[in-house]
Image: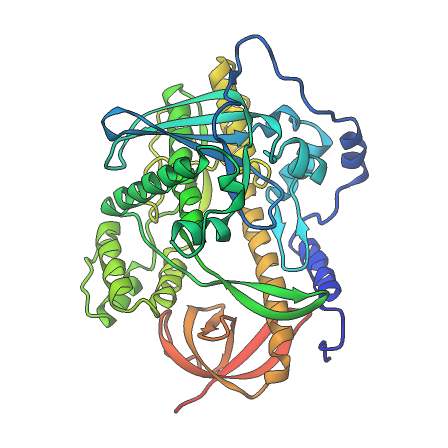
Length: 491
């Protein structure tokens, strides 16, 4: 079937809806949720002193250009002796989304927002996620603040967690902010309009870079994969655009990693259970060792994140153009993350890629259910209340959230591949350079060097491993199933 003369967006929406259903996710909000939503009003702010008034600070949001569900704000403050205090404000979603309600039941079912090229399936209704629980520009909102004090070398010196009310002074977009920080464009208008915000953002950028350097010294992996997003011209799919990392994205990433660690340790310090985000020691370390050897580096036989980071740093410096290809191979070999329930006093399995022992998900409660669970645990711990979840319940939720996150990623990949199939359907028979991104009993997958599209290698996959370079020919596409098939060709 030829899709070039059809409305691509509507085709992809239908594919996305069916993919959601096929993966056990609910694409539309049930009537009970919508009825309950009608009764929700903006919450009153307590005046009993339990909420800190931080509305005067230079809070700003930094997100994608088109993001409307704003989960966090940031601000920095210079302290004596070169130390910097960083505050991360996280939307207090729990105030309006309470357990054992229809809205919470739906969120618990899907556990995450699902972002496809043609349509977003939000975990929470937009009245909440893009309005009442979103930290919107010029809005006053209840939040959970994670306060962190960093020394001049990026090490964490002190931290605290508390409730507050804040006011978003500026809604900033990654690309425009990064263009200024990286010296390519002048100060964004949204920044210059707020007195003192320019200096504050420069301080945030500086301390974020120090946090990143500190993590990498301790073995955090500096990986840079190629992500692409479809570009539409009206309803017609025009191209795939590479979504590159930049300094503005790194500010948010570095602050959120630090905040998620503080949240996990805060719960432990109060003898509370927690839901941790874990990336275990890679089972395919031996293949990572082989990849390093192909680049002239010897890694130890046992998994060693510091040695791996040193290897990645050297490759990035010597061959930056091919570094994203290597990064994707390493990501595949590291394996997926998962959620694990941790009882008070138990040790954590840690996050191999971030080289941290204590790590939760807490900074995106509008988009991820594990973050909402963590928020409820934090609020109960702050108030001195009983645990809102028993260990057995957290264990069940950990398993369920991991399963649904995997399902959501498969939906997103399927629709992204359907988009790619539309773009490639007129190029059957063409040859491309690629590298192997997956090799198992389930099949062998390759990603093209250009355009950055992944598909299955149906013919000639024998003997290939993750990271191998291979010349392939496109033999078929199936838009509705998101299939793109190749065969290996020899020069």
